[in-house]
Image: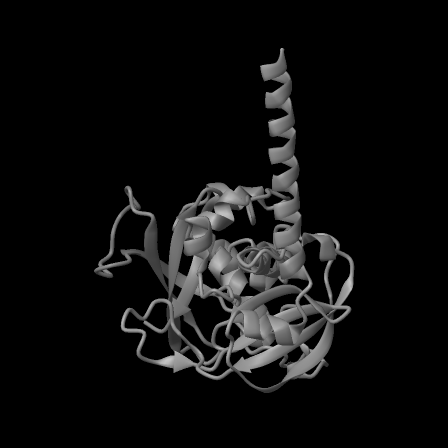
Length: 310
């Protein structure tokens, strides 16, 4: 009986000790001032930060065809949690942003040599002079890596596209659920038809998650009625960050399915997960023009991930 009682006491002491340790660790991380945070993580920044406020949305849902502000916050949270700062308690609040320019910049994650570095930022979310969120912004405004220079795959074990699917983002089937069952050529046809019909939501549902991610920081601040330096991300789709808003109405006359690697025409998709569709159209002066469209297969169907000149 004495042994059982002693075991219970020891167990309760350990449990109490663990609770204190966790609380202490979290308190240290969440009670740092911006200056202390810079020192703690040995961050070299240029001059003083640019300060402005940001409204954290109450919901981070990403609906079909909608502007993906929730995607920004879910991604930023992955990077912020890497230093113990969960952003979810900030939902529906207004916080201060302290954005510093890094002295050394960051290399492109896809550049194995890591030779060239790009001007990049440190983003701190501050409340009552304490850091409540933090991440780095590659090439000034792209989301991540973390302050510890960990990228999404380092933190979650997943690349962006796999992470999106695990989070079930962009997979909700709304009124345009038929798009999920279309083959690549029909997705491209649907995309151009939706633009011609003025159905922007349907057009956006033809696009890949990577394209939607780019919309958040491409040409940040242009044509949005707010100074670029006072924006954490683009507020909406505009011509400068969208594959829909700036697309002219066209009437394609041909679609050719091709292998994405050798660019040779193919009769069917087979077991491919990426393909190319070359399309041509006639301009108003009857001159011929066109583009090639690259598509990737996701859990909810084929999606357009890029376009270019043939």
